[in-house]
Length: 310
Image (tube, rainbow, N blue to C red):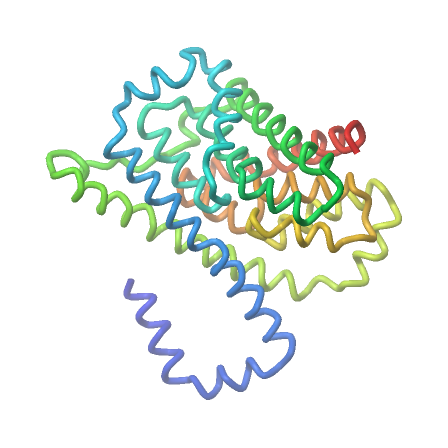
C-alpha cells in the first residue's frame, strides 16, 4: 500500500516528464498493451476473488466430498469438465483454485479446473465461434484440446507433484467472525496479492510485446514446426485475456489453423501474468515447475488435436 502511494506521488510530482516520455509511439504502444491487459483482466480477477471468498466462507467442505469423486484420478476429469460453468478468464481462476485447495479439494483436481475453466467456459467458446465464423471445428478443437491438457496436467501432478510445492496461506482471520465479515476479509486478502502480481505480469508482457519485431511472425509462419512454437511463445508473451485471444488468433491469417489452435490452448493456461499470479498464489517453486510443464503439454496436445480435427 505504501509503495503504491509512493508511486502515485512520484507520478504527480514528475508528471511533466512522464507526459513527454509517452509522446513517443513506442511508449504509447507499451501503455496501450499494459492498460488493455489490466482492464481486460481486472473484472474477471474480481469475479474470481469473490467466488474464491464465497467458497472459503459459505461452501462447506462436505459439498466437495459429494460433488467430486473420492479418487483423485477420477476427480481430475470431473473438475476439468466442470470448468465449463465458470464465465471468467484465467486471472479469476487462480484465486478460485486456491480457494478450492483450501477447502480440501485435491490439488490435482483444483489445478485441472484452473487450466480448463478459462478456455472452455461459454463466453470463451462463443467468442471463438464469432472470431472464426463458419469454422465450428475450431471451437470443438479448442474445447477438446483444452480439456485434454487440463486432465493430463492433473494426472501428471498426481504422479510427480509434491504437496510442499503448493503453499496456500492459512486463514485464521476467517474463523470466529460473522460470515459476511469473513467474506470481505477473504476477498481483500486474495485481491491485493493477485492484483499486484497481475500488474507485474502486465508490465512484463507490455515490455516484451513492443520489443518483438513484426517481421519475425512472417518469417516463422512458413515453417509448420516453428509456426506452432512461435505462436505458443507469442501467447505466453502477449498475456491476452481468454475472452479476447480468439480475435487475435483469427487475425494471424499467415499461420495455419493448427498453429492458431495451439495459440488458443496455451494462452489461457500459461502466460507471463499467469506465471506471476501462480507464483504469488501457490509459491515460486510451484510456478517454476508447473508453468514449463504446462507449456510443453499444451503444445504437444494442441498440435495433435489440430492435426486430427483441423
